[in-house]
Image 1: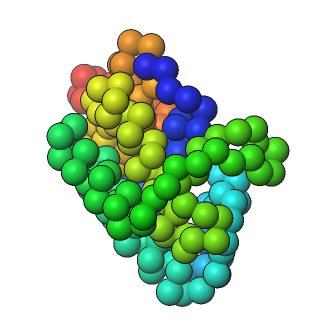
Image 2 (image 1 turned 135 degrees about the vertical axis):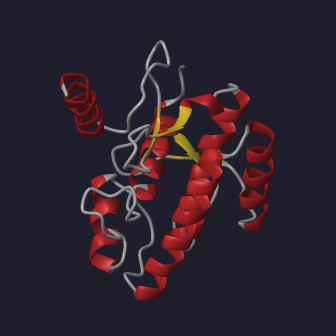
Length: 181
């Protein structure tokens, strides 16, 4: 499945943000509960634009995270409805922009828009590409029985089953122990 670089980056960011919930995080805790945690994930993904650094912003982004976790699991037609709702709510207007070290790419909100709104709109724009390519089946939930992580399977043969090597190794070890016993 071939997507543009900005779509791949947006999907990766959505998965990383979505996996900050306790049932998917490495720590087992909500990893998006402080402005510092939010700043860390934004920095890790080179997320540009306005940041307020407030508890209210963290709460808005956490609500966006929850909405994106639901969107990730929708079938194609239902995803269209949700993507359109997100774009409508934000009065999104796609435009080409160049900033930082990035060449021309699409943004649909201004860099001054509230962070949660920008996150939702950038995710929605990535979902537009996924839906148009009929690739919703590539947006997956980890098959490890103790993980709710999500990921985009961009492998050539669409065979990825786990959100991380850690989950894959853990499940392989469990299967091996079950066979040996």
